[in-house]
Every structure is written in C-alpha cells, then in structure tokens.
Length: 224
Length: 267
Image 1: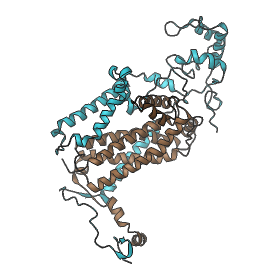
Image 2: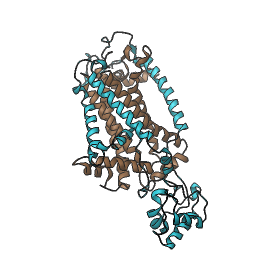
Image 3: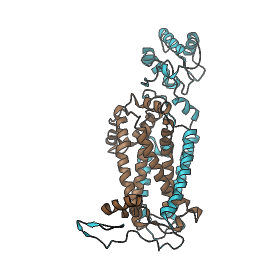
Image 4: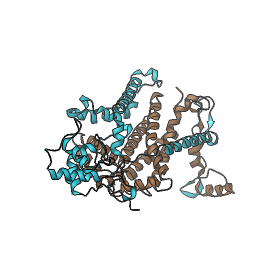
C-alpha cells in the first residue's frame, strides 16, 4: 500500500533523488563511534542540530503564551511557569537548551578546528559555521531580555552599553536594537522579540541549509 | 508512464532525461569499514538522541528555568550579570586595561580580533597539514584562547556574591504599593539602593519579612546601624521619618493573588 502511494507520487514528482541526497550515503569508519569510541567527538555537530530543533519546537510553543509588551511579558511568563500544563517543562527545555546549544556548538567548533577540517576545500563551510556561531549567540542575547525580569533588563543594559561603545556607529547600533539611544523599554522588548523570533531564525535557517548542503557536496573530511 | 524510481522531466514532459549524473560521492577514498547512513547508522543516532532527550527532560524537571521579579529600571542597587556564556567577556571588561578609558579595547578590539581570526582561520592557517600537532601556532593560539575563556569565566563565578545575586532578584509578593507617594518620594530615594527595589533585600536586609512595629523601625531610621546603615536623623524631617517607619512597619508578605507590588496576572 505504502509502496504504491510512493510509486504514484514518484512517477509524478521524482522524489527519489531528494531523499537519496539526504539519507543515502555511507558513514566512513573514522567518524563512527561504533568502531572507534573516540569518534564521539564527531557527534557534536549533530547534537547541536538536535538541540536547535528542540529550541525551535519549544520556542513555537512558548509564543502561544508569551506576550511581548512590558506590562504583560513578565506576567505571561509567570503564568506559563506556574499555571500552564507542562509550561514549566517547555520553558525549561528552551532555557536549558539555550545553554546546551552554546556548549555543543563550542565543542563542535573545537573538533573542526583541531582536526583541521576547515582546510581546503572546506573553507567556505567554516565561514558559514562561524556566522552560525554568531547567529546563535545573537539568539541567546536577544532571548535573555524576553522574560522581562530584573536580570533580563540589567544584562541587556550591559550588552547594549557594549554595543554602544563601538566607535563611530555605536549609537546607531544601539538605537537600531533598542529603539532609543538611552531608554530600554517597550520598543526594546518588541524589537528584541522580532529579532529573536523572526530575523535571526530566518538567518539561522538559511545558514544551516547552506552548511548542510556543503557537507553533502564535499563529504566529511578524511581521517587525520 | 515509467514505473520505478528516478524519472526526471527536462522542460518538455514528453522527453525523459535518462542519463542522470551520479547523485552521491562514493567513499572509496576512505578505506575501512563504512556503514550505510540509512537505516543502520540513523537508528543508532536515533537511540542516542532519545537517551539524550530523557536526560535533558530530567534536567528541566529537576531545575526549573529561573524567573526573577518583574523588571524595574529604577532599582539602581541591582547588580547585573549576563548569562554564563558571556561571563568571560564581562570579566575581561573588569581588567584595568580593558575598562574605563580603555573600554573600547575590552568591548570591541579584543572580541573583534578574536572573531575575525576565527572567521579567517582557513586562510591564516593555510598549510596542507591537518594534524593539530603539526600546526603548533594555530593549535597553540586556540588552546590559549580556550584557556583564557575558561579562566575568566571561572574568575567571574568565583568572585561573585551568589547569595546576594539570588536575594536581589527573588520574587516576593508583598502589600507594597509602588504608587504610594511615601514610597515614590522618600523610600525610592533613600532606602531602595541597599534594601532592594521592592525592599525585599539587597546589600541590606529584607524589610518585608521582619515583624517590627513602627517605633522600632523609626529607631533604625533615626540612628542607623553601626557602620552598615547611615543615620537619617539629620537628613530627613520628623514627619518624613514617621511616614517611612509606618510604611515599612505595615509591609508583609502576601499570597500571589493579593500582591500589590506586581502587576495583575490577569487571570
């Protein structure tokens, strides 16, 4: 039954090459922990992707309750945490996932660096990876303000001061991010929300797609 | 129609394209025991992911995500702290030659150089050798950077007052009325910088919990406490001191629903 449905669709759309490109490839011995346990270092990239998926899903559920304005933001998070079924777990996953994704990405970067996997012909994939690193840190920074509690406000204040100290364009960056060159308020919260939920995820998806397409094109770097 | 996998059209659907380019690279350049990704290796990854997910869920249940009290920009006594993965940068900004007049060095130049070097690593380290031992400069610089990040993060954590950090952000539901003129005009200017923006404690003690009467509070306000709290006898008028004392003596913790210090949850 399933086969006939598949064939029917495949006759019209030719979907076989699509899943073959994704799934039909060999895993070489030197990255397979089943053969060499030390090869677990090659799992960090996949784990980073897995946690990013957790972040996307838990984030989608959080926005069902979260309200990005300064009167209701904290209350919506408090309500989510105390009254919504499984709200504690969903917010917990998003909170701890944010830390874990930074850890895993850091380890993945170190693995690629110390195995020299960024050398020709894979330079561009390294560059995309570093941009992904910056995007994830941006997501971590903008997400920190959203609960609108004390540490959120003051940590953001420090961060914006640092952004403001960039020579020449500092004030401009600060106004772009915060909506004002001094006040951290209603504008800042909505802007950080928009950046956290729309702008940076869009960049993240594009960069991840390029990252993965390049891996499939170039294959995994050989053993040392 | 052609049964079977691998049919492609080339613009005109009457003409089929038969000579397809090879879809996947073979891994013949990696001699050894290769394994098919689908389904064997994927199943192993799936199991690993499931085990990881269970551990992760246990973590979220054992340690709920923290939430501090609602943001209050007027609370100047609050000591800010970034999330832990930015602590190293925050610590670097405390060093003499990376702060004050040299702030640009700590905030922009050092992170800028580090990020640019990371971005350009393939061109800065462009020899053929991949083994980390055979490219000592690149490996050495990376190890030094990692060591600095670990050390500064540790230093930031070790020299931080975590008890005060927890106390200053605690959610305390009280009958404190932030609209009251006594609070806005007197307490905000004299008390909150030490006792916390909602008087639930900062570098000074919590004023909500203790059950003192107005006379006791007045004695504290007039005389101060040794070196830790100044006397306000000469700085405020008698009326002001009495008003503050009565306001503080009235404070008590209440339940979530009756709290006046946080905006309504709108339930």
